[in-house]
Length: 395
Image (cartoon, rainbow, N blue to C red; front, side, top):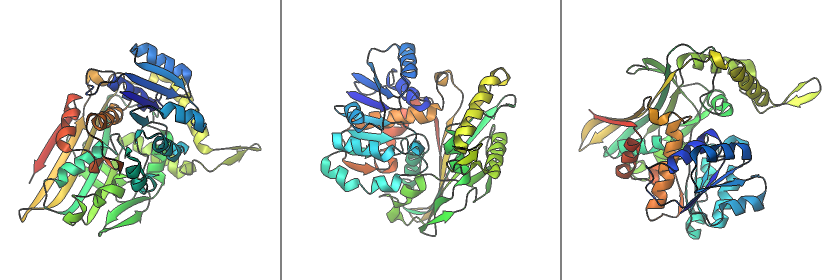
């Protein structure tokens, strides 16, 4: 099978490649087209991995002909180009035109509704697209499906993600993922599902404190823009069970949380709106990215060794056989040597899982969110294979 990976030399793309060429693969991969604008990064990754199935393709995604050539003939296209760069719909359409299965990493729900609206076109063309297949969204959607399957009637499902760092405090701000994504999570309003309908909530609203086990401790959660709340409460097998509430809330490490709040207060939430400096128009995001990159490079020796922990969990409330029930399904990610060469192993490994499960089974044509495409009984063993711990509690 041939896999095209767009943005394949970035942090997430590189992680996906590492998983695809590992002994965890469940499909016969004959070629991985590694497509990116940076040939230097692609060559470094290919050299590091030393897998002859990796084919380097220099790609400018703004060139429709080059994009079509990169996708055509593949069995699936994995789109890792950052959503907020604005190319997601063009890549999505290029996959449809080439009749190639498609997945992406989502991106705060920016294009989720538009993509789902193309379900009938993809279905008619016999093409499969599953959107938002990283950790959150992606794995988180499947967690919600697992909760829903334990209930006959659903009052609410509340979804959370918390990250924490242990070790000496870092004097340098190191973004957990794309700076634009973090700022958007903190500065933009979000759509949540309350009282049986979608409503817009202000940035950083829905403040909620939960006591979690160490190393997370007492965590402050907040609403943020994401795609799960746009799809999960409307999914077959969930919608008809009467769900009245669905929310998504985020917690980043305590001290880093304060830094991102401060940047939004300073005005960096409007990161794409240009400002004029000395007669030159610049975007705050470009300035901030360069400053952060310089600071990380300049102070590299001051960055301490820290261990990263994640917990992704959904709490569902409703009834089973007429009896009130609370269901909690959680996936935890703890430090492991397996993740040593990854940046955010949970996101990249889950994208690899999704792509391989699509290839391994007869494909359903159309556009789907993960909770509507993947079976929990097939998905969860793939998580465990990658040392993610799954726990289900029913009260």
